[in-house]
Amino acid sequence: MSRPTNLVNSWNEWDPLREIVVGVADNACFEPTEPGHRPQLRTPDGGSAPFPTGPKPAEMIERANEQLDGLVRLLESQGVTVHRPVAPDLASPLRTPDFQVENQYCVVCPRDVMITLGNEIIEATMSRRARYFEYQAYRKLVYSYWNNDPGMVWTVAPKPSMADSMYRQEFWEWPLEERHRRMHSSEFCVTQDEVVFDAADISRFGRDIVVQESMTTNRSGIHWLKRHLEPRGFRVHPVHFPLDFFPSHIDCTFVPLRPGLVLTNPERPLREGEEQLFLRNGWELVDVPQPTSTNDEMPKYCQSSKWLSMNVLSISPTKVVCEEREKPLQDLLDKLGFEVFPVPFRDVFEYGGSLHCATWDVNREGTAEDYFPVNDYRPLAEGPRILG
Ligand code: ARG
Image 1 (cartoon, rainbow, N blue to C red):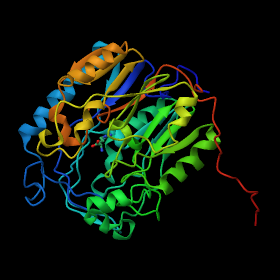
Image 2: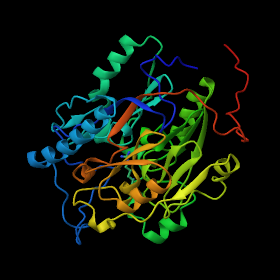
Image 3: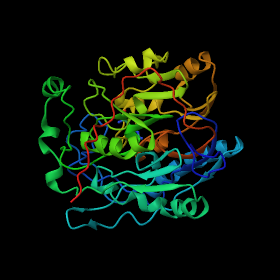
């Protein structure tokens, strides 16, 4: 489909990496409480103590930047070209015709906002108010691809209103039993009325794109992705992890590392039946070991779970970057035949994620392979179009 000389070319999560974007912690603020998100401190009284607001302290930002810079050095030493976004002012209040929010968040996790699908870059709709304008930090980069790669396609997904009516506020009050009872309905804090998706709910397998229904991606968002991507030759498969009661972003749950191998989360199995696509095509789903921290031991302001342990970044189908403390996972990767590159990254966790989250690959070797020839994929029915 695309020439290997294209600047924008990335079809999966594992092909040899040539060019990537790594986030920066500059200007980061604490994430505000809003209809799509309720941050909580990781302390014994986490539920009641107020979560801080406004800019993060300079020394915290510095610590995160040091670890992000360490990742950049490692990638560069492996021959990868690295770009960084430019953080705008994030501390001022925002107001659109439909919502207000006291500050923005940060630009540490490009994975959540931007995705490369072959020769196309898509800016996601996003699902939270404080992240509505995050794409701005990447526009300078996107323009440089746009100006220098005539084969590149640039798509901005429709922006949702993020008005109160887009959200389901009761979601936050449901007790655990209620969540358990509803686990197969895939209804979370965002309703189905508008097209909503974060890019990090998508995982790329060549012609096949896997998308998690979650708090940050609704069925309307997946429908938009299907209608947009099927005519371009992709198959878009919704997936569900019913035991994750607060699902958001697929890369701590289902992480492909090379053709035929996906790392899976032992506490978040796929919805029954959805594993068939993988098994019928000879893929192996391998559970990762328990992380080295419990959820309570995660950094105080971190809103992600202990499963950031499996948020690894592939440099190639044989080289994987992994957080330095996650020895059990490193041993598994070693056994599976990977060369592991450990880096410290815990100080980045409170900015939304780990190694996969904090990156956005724009160029990997390779083309659109079909890794799932055995499938009963049904594209959206296209009725005849009647003009006038
Ligand atoms: N919701 C995930 C978990 O806690 C964290 C996902 C982080 N990923 C990302 N791309 N920001 O397990």
